Length: 236
Image (cartoon, rainbow, N blue to C red):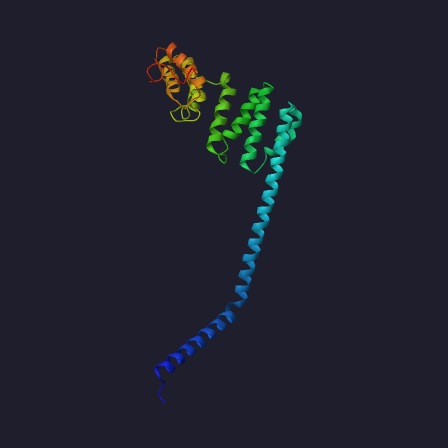
């Protein structure tokens, strides 16, 4: 007897379901062990990741406490007490703590008038490509300031030129050293232009701008801001 359309559809559906069931059984029989292994591997990897996260968090908290201990010693002017925690953090794999420790070590050396040692610490930050560029730039400025009296003017100019530009957060500090280096070379025109650049940049602190206006004026350049000649914002 011929199957009705409804019976035919039900039959085909039953055949399709049976076929799919056989396929799934075949896949499990063939690859079941590897599927189990893969699932276990994923669970193990996920567990290891959670454990690593926990260890990193605990280690970061410990280093934060170590840094606070160092700062407590520094706040009390106990450089000897701060030496051990700072030395430990200076070897940290975390860039932030390592950078702060190296800057602090350099500041301690500056306080002891060890300019050469401080410059070396700043240089270790400036030359570490893993550290964020703003910190490396700051370290280069402080390194240059620490060893300024021992450097040739052209070295100072070479270091500071990329930083003594409009829009740079370090225009004031870098520009002052570069302007002084130009003066040491006898290049009064370039020195004046550098000080004028500082004076006209509204993002530079007012105290630095005021000093730059005076230096540029001595060198024959009117560097007063273009605000009607009042110099508002510099002397306030």
